[in-house]
Every structure is written in C-alpha cells, then in structure tokens.
Length: 228
Image 1 (cartoon, rainbow, N blue to C red):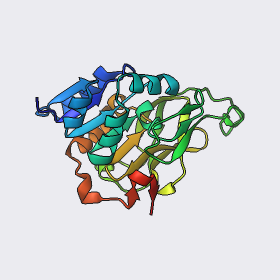
Image 2 (image 1 turned 90 degrees about the vertical axis):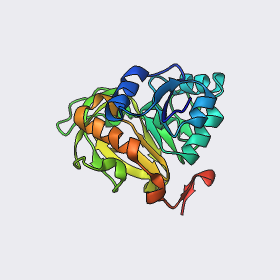
Image 3 (image 1 turned 45 degrees about the vertical axis):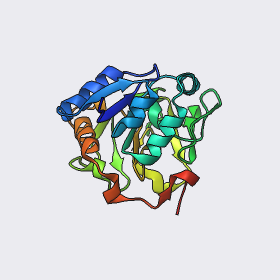
Image 4 (image 1 turned 45 degrees about the horizontal axis):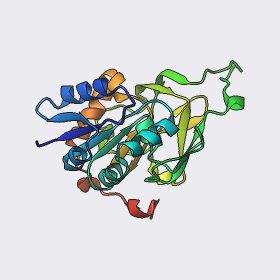
C-alpha cells in the first residue's frame, strides 16, 4: 500500500476531522489514519495531531511503539504537528510533569493564573478556547496565501516556550504573546486547529501537502536539538 499522508493515531484527538480536511485539500492523495509504525515510516508526509493530557499522550505513544517512528519522521519528511502533537515535540511539559519527545528544544507551560486578565482587568478563562489572531513570526511556505493576523481556532490550557527563538513561526495573544507555531527544517507545528479554522486552516493544510522542505532548508540541526 502506497501512503502519501499518514495521520498518526495514538488514541487521542479528533482524527476524523483532520483526515477529512486533508482529503478535501488533497483529493488525489492516499490519506490513512494509522497507528502502524510501518505505514507511518512508508508515508511521504506525516501529520501528528492530538488532544488531551501530555502524560496520557506520551503513555499511548510508547504503548503503541510509536516513539521512534515519530522521531524519525520528524527528522526526515514533511511533518505537521497539531495541538498536543505540537507540544510533545518539545522536551518537557508542566502538565503532569511529563518528559516529552525532546525533538525540539524548549518546554510547555500552563497559562499562569495570575496573568490571566485582559486590559480592563477582567479574568480570562483557561482553557483558551475560540478564535484568535495569529501573527506570522517568520516567512514560511505554509503561510502562503494566509494574511498576517488571520484568525484560527484554539482549544488549549498550555503553550510552548522554545528555547531557540529561531523556531518561532507564529504567535498569538492571550493576554500576552505566546508561541502558536514553530518551524524547523521539515517540521511545522501549530497550537491551533487548522482542521477547524475554515478557509485559513484549509489553506495551511493545502500548503503542507505540496510543501517541499528541501527547497527551504533551515540551519537547524534536529539531531542535536539546536540551531546555528
């Protein structure tokens, strides 16, 4: 079976909506939702979505024998992380004091209770849920055709803090600026849900299925988890 795009299934996340959105923008592609390491390894592109808690996510990844194939895919082919699939690419999450995959340098922290006030002093809810503007931190092929400041749909209580600023591809505000997109070599990962973000999200997914990272090589060395 020839697989163009594998959507990683580790038992967490709205995988059907992700796969259907990809099928919509790439109707001729073979898209599979799979927990098979062999199919993920064979796929030309990998999408790594997810919802839920970091500790549960890492437990399921290991229980299904997916850690190695996810790490290999993230270093070798076009790779899109979504929501929890972005967070666990980093080294550590405050959620459950969880050691994550360590593919990218940095940590994941919860929105701090004391900072969750708007400009009028009104308390902001956590999780951060709903539409929010995304500002493009750096040019990238996956932003093609998407206006800076476009709105995307979020549902999350934690956010990533890369230790390498060069990783930051986009940020949003709630109420302070936080990283909501990262890019390194063949990895692009987002905190928001493109599959729930209407035209802007479909545009991003369409850009992913035609993206050739070799044409836009980064100075990052993922094997050492640092950038020059």
